[in-house]
Image 1 (cartoon, rainbow, N blue to C red):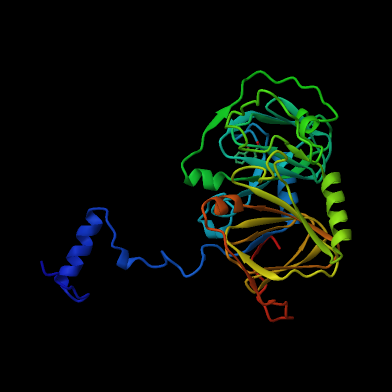
Image 2: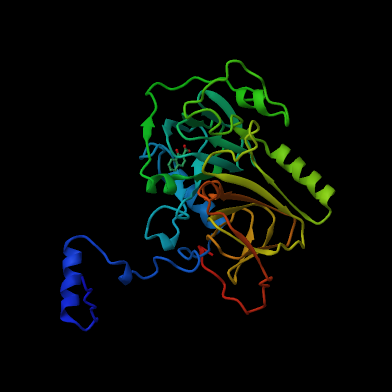
Length: 369
Ligand code: 1HN
């Protein structure tokens, strides 16, 4: 058969296009932007701590915890994502406010979550019945399908960062959610969670027979559910002393396998001493940088963002990212890199330093600056 070649001016082509649309079909040759040369679906964006803290505090005064979702959570809603409450295409980022005397009741869901405590003291998160104390700088995991609830027995609020893989899991249409029982759980605060009692000595993991099977399958997430700031701080100080070049990074990992804490989420703490500047690097996958301590500036694809403690910066997939610390600084990074790696999509590249030229760069987008 001979293919009849259409020209765009041919009226038959218009007929073809409307018949295709009628049949819920789209020709590849009319798609634009489906296959960009490099990832390009997001721009960098920064939220300021002052805005986040003020609005979280006002929410605490005005809105009870039982108003849907059982959590007082302000989601980072990236303006590129069409009004969705998502920080990137794969990552949820938020600040959560739990006032003195409040309880965020038990539930569980398939999306995996972690928290990094920013302010307050004395809160307990029960994870599958194990009471985990939360203090500033601590990282606490609530892996997919684990029951979790938060208790604030004190009088002062606690504010923490929530990171989840919810956008990814939602796009995979794999979200399950279950509210907990109506009865309140009873818990006795303990100096160490049972997860830390068993798994917090580096290099030593308990031998148990038979191996318990976790609800989501063995080895799918870290059995150590809390990573204490004192340990992270000490590890970073030692690395800086050993390396002698003013910067060090630790990755939070599953002590039984060395893998990431959860299948979809990577968590790291990056320390830079005052004056340190990192090379400009690109990597596939998006990231949320939370400034835990210090101040500095990050150039993302030529846009300069200045930051200080509590600010949150989103870096898109394949953007060139370059940090400079003005004071000694600690940046927490949440990324989707385990998914990128599992899918065989990982790539990195080093770029020439972009530099921050006075007035030479657009001040990039920020919320509430
Ligand atoms: C969730 O369960 C918590 O348990 C926080 O603290 C944020 C965001 C989306 C979906 C579930 C929590 C959440 C969440």
